[in-house]
Length: 459
Ligand code: ARG
Image (cartoon, rainbow, N blue to C red):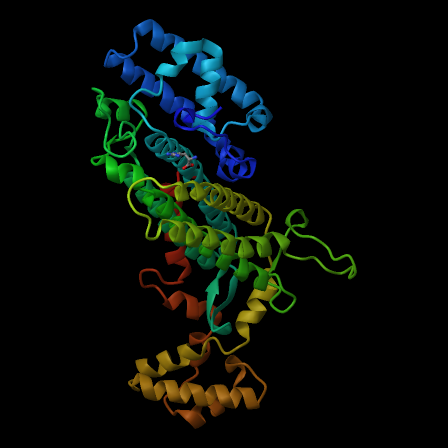
């Protein structure tokens, strides 16, 4: 049964019916549709369109329907209703007869769908916010337990300067903090109720939209009905946040895939998130991380698809907008799943102290220290850089690290170099000198860990 049969003489084509139908995916909005319908029934009662008894009867039937919907999704999917709004209304009428036909007074599926979708997004945002916090916690716990592990930091995937594993963890905490605040921003702009906007120009009934908005936990009602039913900015904003956060998770994955490789050998991933090869018995593949890396593309795809659907759409509602849901639902699930898998990865990660340190000792990552040493002795940085570069070349020729060069060799390049050069270029010295705000110095990192723990209430 459709909601709009009156004006039609002939039946819809079966193929079109299938093409038009959104119930197979918008059934997930059953709870939101029923919540908003109950709120609407109360607003109708306040404006005397429904009596108190009628409202109570509608509300109880809707609650029973919600219970049934939760218990048996298959039942919803079997129905030939066009969408979730039609399904709720048809089933309400089935339960309470003619009275059910009053519920749609003054509203349209156009304000209904965007109200439902906003309620759904809000619910998911709360879950995502919690998950982002949880992932931060695991980064912080790892930062704490791997406090003294020195490893190389890279630029251009070349060993650049030494860092610590803790410091690497804290970089991701910062990224996740931004993801968190972006998501909160989405919530702020999203949380305005479109209900009572009707099809596009408002409702002709005396509905207190502000009160209705507050009753559903919105901050206020929207200002312009034409905009309210057209607006899907919140979907785009949510997917933009998802895309940025997935980009962070994919970089995290890539870092760990490299750290886990035979070449780097900095970490060992747990058996619980890796898989083997059907041919090569020795393999332990970082599948979980590779999948996160790839799923980032899937979320970008959803964002691009929705932006493209919305581009050039005339105001107000157009059926094109039905196409937002599958992408949105898929992207939010993917993001949430990826956050959970990242947590699982960090829960069981083993960092290899020795090979991290060994790798940091190679690659001349303390060359900057020689330059800084010379600057302290009055050489200009550009000159000092050049001398240090020549020393690297010398060390490469001798197949040695900088620390192993003879003092006499150092002196060949600069007379200002004394015996204290050695203690200035140890890995520890490289770290300890970087005391400025945001630097890698262990005491600085320790302070950041404490701050993060306080912020997240970890004791
Ligand atoms: N299934 C539709 C959607 O997802 C609901 C709104 C339908 N409104 C309409 N006027 N046909 O966008």
